Amino acid sequence: MDALTVGAVAVAVAVAAVVGFFLGRKTGRASGGSTGGTPARAESSGQTTEADAAFRLALSRIGAYLRENVDAPLAAAFKDRSLSLRRAAEDAVAAIDDLHFFLEEPEGEIHEDDLTRIVKEAVQAYESEWDISVLFSSKGSVPVRVNADTLLDALYLVLHNAAVFGKGEGVTSTVSSDDEWGRVLIRDGGPGFSAEALSRAYDPFYTTSEGGLGLGLSHARRAVELQGGRIHLRNHADGGAEVEISVPLT
Image 1: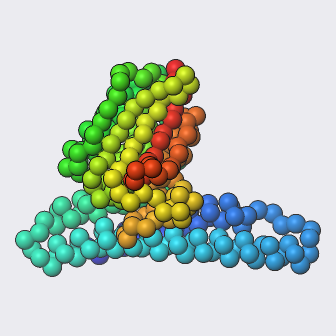
Image 2 (image 1 turned 30 degrees about the vertical axis):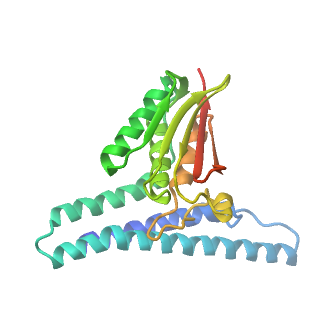
Image 3 (image 1 turned 30 degrees about the horizontal axis):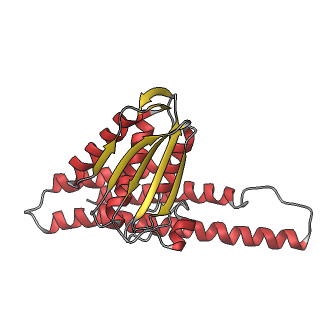
């Protein structure tokens, strides 16, 4: 247990450091200075404060995630011998692997494929792992140019969000197309996005779920945009959140 806990902490620090540096570059922390005198120093100070806040948020999210998904199951297995220590260790390793997954940039070659087949595979994989039913519909094959594995990851993350924030009820996945795009619309039966969530959903580490990392939608967007696609969030007029993913037709 000690070795695994130390390993988890090391991963947390490493991931937070990399994410903190990345966010710092986005806010200008790693950029060169200007010749504006005091105003430039004030701007630099403001940017540094913003980057530091992002770094602290990263540490907080990763720490909470590791406590819930690594420390807690291992501690419970050591305390209660009726629980499987092996299973707890496997779950802990899987949680750490998830951190590596979110840290890596999506990549992969683009090929012709069938969007209906890919979405159906994502739905079936999600249903089998989480025992949640997703209503799937499509009018037939939709030929697109994508990387299937990367798109599967994005779809799985969006389905996960729909199940969590939709309380596991009323999740639907619909495949369609127009003259230019193959489209996937995933809708849940929950309360929908708040105004804050709609404006911040892609921010790294933003989440309203306790113990969540807040990296799912930001990773899904990178995966979709890598393929020349786009992702759009909105609320349905009759309630529930909608996520629409569009990718280029062949």
